[in-house]
Picture 1 (cartoon, helix red, strand yellow):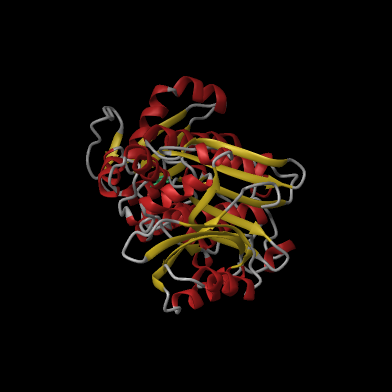
Picture 2: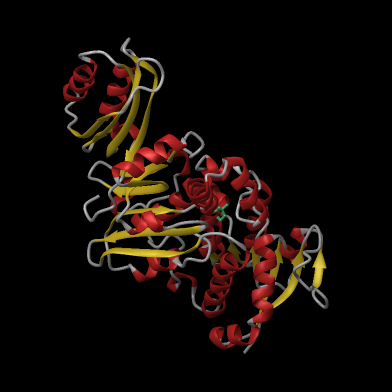
Length: 438
Ligand code: HSE
């Protein structure tokens, strides 16, 4: 059968991994696809010392690939927003199928790209955009197709999880571990995308669209990073039976969908608490299947290449299928139906439990005032601890609350911070139990 001819754009970490996996496993990949998948051309700014490109056509201009009549599938691995958008749209315009690992591109420009691809009748596949090598897009889009997805939550940034894990286990500094994650090829070109939650929000946006059949709405995602997490909070969480993880969470409610990325306390006994290092995990709750968990390497050259090549296999199998019989890009056809009109909820409307840490003057009545402020907002306290004084008369107070609306907690924090007996700002970390009715 005719080969599928691939043009790889970008020979960096993921491009190099994809090149090597396609070369190394060419025979098995051909048997799985039912036809050879051959690298016809590679566009790269510089050689990758881990790849032997001898005998492969190369170019320094990615647009050569997008316009090359001998290419069936363009593999976009250059990253970033604007050039990648132009490259992918040019490839689509030239009738090429596209495989990309670019979560920023799909989260921000996906609606436009899928519309263009639909009009041309070409495939755009993006398994590698979310959670590296874990086939979570395929699972959610196809394997869980019978279900109404109720919620999903996960650790979807390998760099952030790598940093939190090594800081906690080895007492190392944030900067030290970040430098190591960069050297290992896990971090984004701009590592603030990892530590400030932007990368995770890109991925969560994609997952939520596929879960609920709603358009991509990255601009509505709430994003909070890990850079303000202190070792003190890590220790207090540990004492209370929790681990701090950086989560992406999306839930269906009657009023709309939650879409939020932030650090969270998760109970030590839940599986997510044991996801360490660069590993990612996503829990998905379907109404028929119940909870399911997807775990594996969330970043790195060959784990991500594994997902890119899986997409190439799908393209090779579907290339001669009539476009309307292919799996829809975002899992649902007929966008505009179902829950499509439900909004992404503003953060004030989400419901969760909270960990609070405050510094109070050690005098009679302070704890009572704190409790009164919470009760006036209808918030029930699950646990309260007053620690020994640390700075003169100031004592840390740690609180765990039951679930409440974020807007009530915002009001509590506003009132607490205005009390003369409370010093500085109140630390708030959300608590997620990740149980079946989360
Ligand atoms: N920087 C990303 C991460 C790479 O650390 O998860 C994979 O998307």
